[in-house]
Length: 327
Figure 1: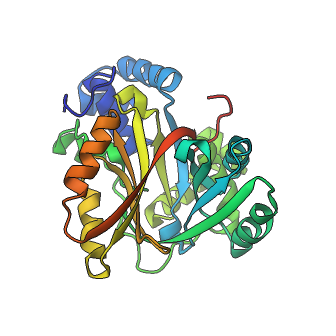
Figure 2 (figure 1 turned 90 degrees about the vertical axis):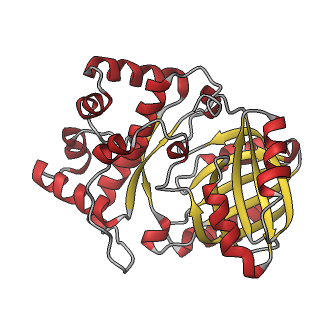
Figure 3 (figure 1 turned 60 degrees about the vertical axis):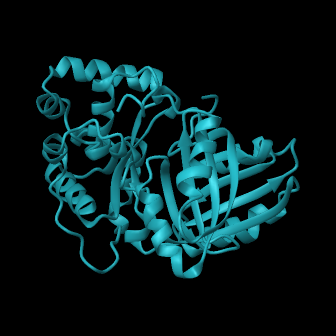
């Protein structure tokens, strides 16, 4: 583990982060019991990680389970307009992972339109009319290999199998059909999107529902897989200062095997098959530029079926799951 975590956090910090990635709504007392420390220690570490490490626990809509389109946008911009466009996209509730790449002239973001109208408004309406945008490339994501409910911290593996099992929520296996968020659940989902650890009284105030109704509807949403609780944090505090988008072209017959291999690589935080000139897109993290080069020229470059890789290092991360101006 030490070779993978050159940052300033210690083993207990990592275990707490993975515990929250496993169940973002787990109580401090439950986490403390599993990790063998006091409730006060967990609460203190949580406050410090929130203040100094950008830790945030948020509810997320699972586009795949909800049967909704999932897109990644590449916007080539005039240099003096890229930051403004990135911030405007980051303020939208249907975007996440907004960043500046290619020396600050390209904005990349993931978007989960909630309705076909949202998608058309963004892709056919607002973006084409933006003067600073030189080129728009929108790629539909076709199949997720890694990311979303499967968090990257599990690859650090600070928790033992027994600890992870003790913290894993006991959700039933989702049904085969797509999940659904009913109109009456929108207020509850929005409250979770603002704070994934919101207490039952806080959710009651946000929704106007009774305590029993909140608990019942929350359990139904999480059990369906249509909503999951995720965390964001600064990878720099773990010692990972370099990140890049990888646009990978694999031979069609090797597409799935390459995607599965990527999912197992420690450096990969996100991987998906995509429509467009490249048929795979991934996010790689590394301690530094040398580490990124070593991965691209080593494990990635040696995969059977990989034909071409375009690397676009992140210059600045504007939004992960939430947007906090000036962060």
